[in-house]
Structure formats: structure tokens, C-alpha cells
Length: 413
Ligand code: BGC
Image 1 (cartoon, helix red, strand yellow):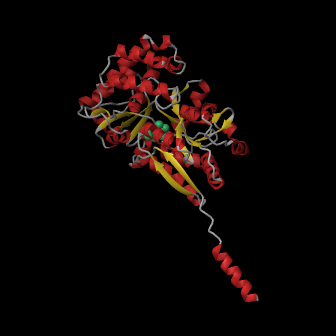
Image 2 (cartoon, rainbow, N blue to C red; image 1 turned 90 degrees about the vertical axis):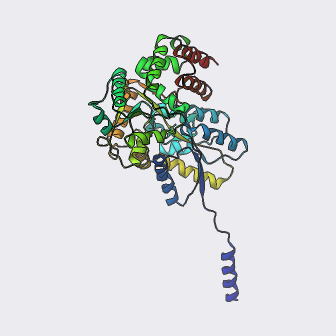
């Protein structure tokens, strides 16, 4: 009898189905070397807790291709666990009622107190947390190869737009590519963020490109912005068309080019190539934008899922992303800065420390603005209409004056 019971118990034990492993499926556009290295920090963290990582990379900086992929998944009723989203895109998905409510976790962990209001404005919808901010990036940066600058006779960081142009011309005369650029609409728009700030300052930036005030848009300042975009256009190489942003970073890293005007994700590429700030490369605010920050924040929007086991893994991922230690270790690699105000800057290099200090200063002085190019100034429909004008102008299809007029109508539609 005893034998029989043991026998039954053993066979029962063997027939118990193994508990399925928890998993998350994450859709993102972090496919460059530096980006993948940063994402790996999150992946490893989750795997340590037994959560399997199903990667859904959709290449294409700025996330345009990724947005098409998300739409297909959500429409077919099968959303991924988490999706990398920018600013207004989070709000658009929230409006459709497809995002999960993270408020109980947020309350338990006190996110309200540590996430800057400028980010919460996008992480929350109708008072409920629907996304977790991974970082704060900013777009008004210049990345420079120190050796190329020295060989070109550029001795110090330029402080104004005109000084920058003069330095870039020196680099060009010395036989290098002055500005490494990738001709894709979002990259041209990224340069545009800086040119708007340096030309008109934060008040004009907000009036024209956040509030879409027709007078501010249809102005001499906007004309000057486009004239300056034309000046930049003369300093890029002839093969810029279609080039990926990280390939352009690679040109500065390898000493083919002097400068790149790009968000601080570029630093991720320099670090990935084992380059050291202050030794191999320099980072500085786009000349004339010192004290101002045009920011964007990558957030993981959490989608509503039917399976409770998937939801449990989703909450683990959300909690992990918000942990101060993760915010430090991830952003050190990514080039961005923490999305929490209570993370020390100890682990960050000189550019990261500057990024953290600049963000805090801009927040205090009300000189922090959402990036036009990266979905934090206006919703996607207007952003894309702006992209179109900026790119056609950069490619010589319309002149400065026509570009101003088209920006005004893009804002109205
Ligand atoms: C994202 C960055 C990313 C960059 C290039 C930006 O929109 O915020 O995280 O590295 O695009 O892919």
C-alpha cells in the first residue's frame, strides 16, 4: 500500500506541468552598437529574475518604422508587453484605451515625487501612469573629434552660431568633412531643434513650435532659422543622403569628420568604440544654446495584456526600469541621463555629469523645452508635416522663404 502511494505521488509529480517561464516582449528601435549595449543592461536585469526577454527590434532612428510595427500589433489585438515610445505618441495610445494602468505600482514606489513634471506630463494620462521613463536625452549637443579639430587649427569650443560656422569651415578647409550628417528627415529635424533655439531662444521656440503661434512662425526669425539650416547644408559631405545617424557618428569617431550635431545617444556610440570624453572627443551644447535644453525621454509604454502571468512580468519590468540603480547603469551606457531626480551622478563621465547638471538648471530656469524632432513639442501629425518641410528645404527642393510659408501651413493643418 505504502509503495502504491509513493508510486502515485511520484507519477503525479512528473505529470505536473512545468510552470511556464515569465516573459516580456519588447518593441524598440535601439539597434545601433551603443543602443544595444544599453538595452542589454535591462535584458540582463530581467533575466536574472527569471524573466525571459523576447526582443522585437525595428531599426530606424527616431522610431518611425517602429511606430508602424506597433500599430500593426495593436490593431490585430496582440500588443507587445512594452513599447519604446516618445512624448505625444504615448498620449495618443493612451487615448485609445490600450495602455495598462501602472498607478498602484507608481504609488507604492513613490514615482510622483522623483520623476520631473516635464516627463510625467507624458507618462501619465488622465492622472494614471501608463508608461515608465527610461531616460532623458537632449538634442542640442555637438560631438567633436579632438584630433581633427587640433589638426584643423580649431582651438576652443565655439560659443555662438557664427563661431561654430567659422570653425566648421576651418575643418572643411583642412580636408575633413566638417559636419557628419545622415540625410533622413528626423536627423535634419534634430539639427533644426538646435538652430531654432540658438536663433530665437526658448520663448520663440515655445511660441512658434509648441503653441504654433502663426505670427511667431511666419517671422523674420523663422526665415533666419532656414537661412542657417542652409549654412549647415554647405558643411556636410555629398554622400549624406539616407545615411544612418550612427554611421555619421562613426565618421567623427574615426576622424573623417570634425563634428556631428546630434542628441546624446551619439555618446553611446563613442563609448561603444572605447573613446573617452575630454581625450578623444568633446561634447558641448550647440553654440548659442548654453543654459537651454531641448529634451526627449524614451519611455516604455505598457500595453494592456489579457494573460495575468504576462502582466506580472510586465510589472517586474516597470519596477526594474524605475529602480535608481538601473537608471544609473543604463544611462551611463546610453548617453542619456536618469529620469529620476534622486540618482547620483557619480558613475557618469564628464558629458553625463554636464547633462545631469544642465537638465536640473534648465528645469529650474524654465529653459527646458520638448524636442520638436523627437515628439515632445507637438503631436506626430504636425511633427511629420514639419519633418517634410525641413527635409525638402535641406535637400534644396524649396528655398528659405518657401520653407517659412510651408511651416506655417504645416502647423495649421
Ligand atoms: C531616441 C533615442 C535613440 C535615437 C536614435 C531617439 O528618438 O530617443 O533613444 O537612441 O532616437 O535611434
